[in-house]
Amino acid sequence: MANSTAGKPQEREFEELVDPYRRELMAHCYRMVGSVHDAEDLVQETYLRAWRSYGGFEGRSSLRTWLYRIATNACLTAIEQRGTRPMPTGLGGPSEEPERPVVAAPEVPWLEPAPDGLLGADPADPASIVAARESTRLAFVAALQHLPARQRVTLILRDVLKWRAAEVAELFGISTAAVNSALQRARAQLEETVPERDNLVEPTDPGQRYLLERYAKAFEEADIEGLLELFKEDAVWEMPPFPQWFRGPGHIARLMKAQCGQRPALFRLLPTGANGQPAYAAYRQGDDGVYRPFQLQVLDVTRGGIQHASVFFDTRLFASFGLPETA
Image (cartoon, helix red, strand yellow):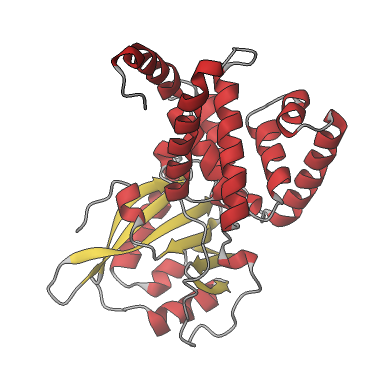
């Protein structure tokens, strides 16, 4: 920012005005690009662009709207340059051979989970928390990645941020009719892409807490049969950066028996939260006896059991979640 002494009061004024929007802009950029790390960079870029043009801000729109416009344009450029971030379930059908060694696809820029602190909701407003949770669930963010960039923006601005059609039209320089048409197409594609999540249970539900305690205990004790009692019949297990994914407790059991360590105490699980969903940080014991980061598991829990497990092997995520280096 400005180095001159004369610029300091304006710089302080700018920082005081824009800092309250940082968390919600992070959530917005994350929905757009599907990466916590990229979202952090894009928020920084947004603030830099805003600072450079702050002197010309005339207040014809609110400061919040102005910042969202800058952030959205930065995200559109990033999507054009870097592409989108899928999940394995978005690239093809399930694998029928759990015993075959899985092969990573590190060249794919995979979707990343986001810590719950990224939700951008007002802690004092329960309705805001619920809405933020719904709009950052992994399944929703993954589905957004399959939309063309302009449709993605339109749906987020209209359905998540509740912008008026005229505001979106002004951003893109198009008619409100064109905005409404893009929104209809985006909604239709989203309905086809977002998998069913029947009767999702809120994180505060006592039944969910009990199920999760059973899950963590069974996982740490290598009790595969006990684990599978907790999965629904159509449960999915996917694990970036491996493109292979598996459906049904039978296939998940075969995968674990063939490719995961089966001795008790090999893993330790620490509870955390990601995308408004329950999650576990899994630490694996090394030859020296120390438990180090291994994978981050994000779960969809319904009344009938665990419906979906998204298991991320990118251990860089542990730092983003504020997790310890050992357990």
